[in-house]
Image 1 (spheres, protein in one colour):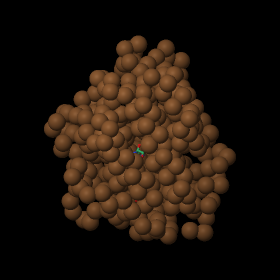
Image 2 (spheres, rainbow, N blue to C red):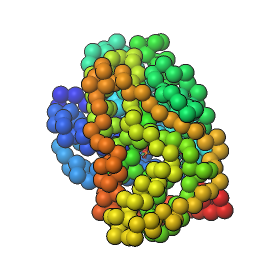
Image 3 (cartoon, rainbow, N blue to C red):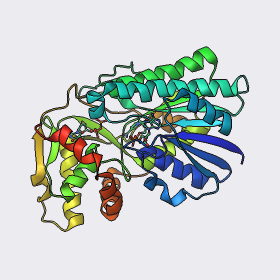
Image 4 (tube, protein in one colour):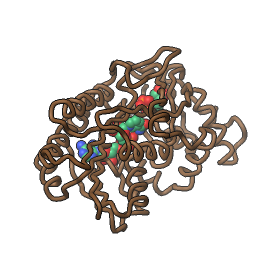
Length: 351
Ligand code: NAD
Ligand code: TYD
């Protein structure tokens, strides 16, 4: 094998798309997927490549310092693509400490382990940290987040991600660790856990359950198809400049209510329901605490410097996403069994 790439969080939503892409595209790389398999981690996501000769899986918690050092000593990764994180804002509101442990302590453990392993032997080495646009805070009606926008996180999730971004930059400046960071907008597509807006709504529409919309549904998000994020990660990992940050976005802003109305149309069509039937399930519920109003990314740097652009229009991506969820009933039934029911009732009953 030419080199070993350690991907953390590879059993999750975005991570599984990145692992699949790297295993298939780079047969000469050994791809090691390190994941704790929390509620969000699912090896079913990786069925197509689980027996590939260049793939290995390790179950481990990035917050476990000793274990992380042992794994680095054994596998000696040349590159790290770090996606493992607690990722849901609502869960961060009810359990912020879990986010500090995974996202802050976990990232510092990986940074320390990379530094110890690589020492001054930095040729060909790279620590790539995957982050979110939420670190920049909340926009008003106009403007975009650029790489120079000041950090202003407002939820425990975004504060923990901002903190991890700062740690990564500190290791670059203080210890010369070869790092690169990207901050992406909201992803959608196959394999997303149905706690996030789009798959939660797909699942509820399928079961003719209310679709909970926080507040008035006027908050705006910029949606990017997950495979376009994975392609950007591949590009930045190979061609991004060390010490730099790249914003990744879909240039695709929707208010939550318009997005859900569009999704309802696609679902009516896919399920052979009367036009307008699914939209009757829309229910406005109590707003999220500290709910960021608008996110919108300016991806010009990534497009100009590295030549990336999204491949899919939203109209196409949302149809593909709905088709995937409807064609993968077993996947969906497995993830909504057990703990999901408890999560759903704690989060939404009596809201
Ligand atoms: P996800 O919740 O679907 O998956 C996270 C994965 O990390 C899971 O497989 C989980 O088991 C694993 N994990 C969690 N804690 C861990 C720990 N302590 N040790 C080892 N593994 C652990 O998340 P996602 O949506 O795929 O997001 C992946 C990354 O991308 C995160 O860093 C997130 O902040 C970032 N991101 C997500 C979005 C989005 O829209 N989903 C947008 C921008 C950035
Ligand atoms: P989410 O998918 O949780 O992503 P994020 O909070 O990281 O942007 O939520 C997307 C938007 O949808 C956000 O404005 C909150 C809103 N939302 C609802 O209105 N209802 C829901 O049940 C969920 C989960 C989210």
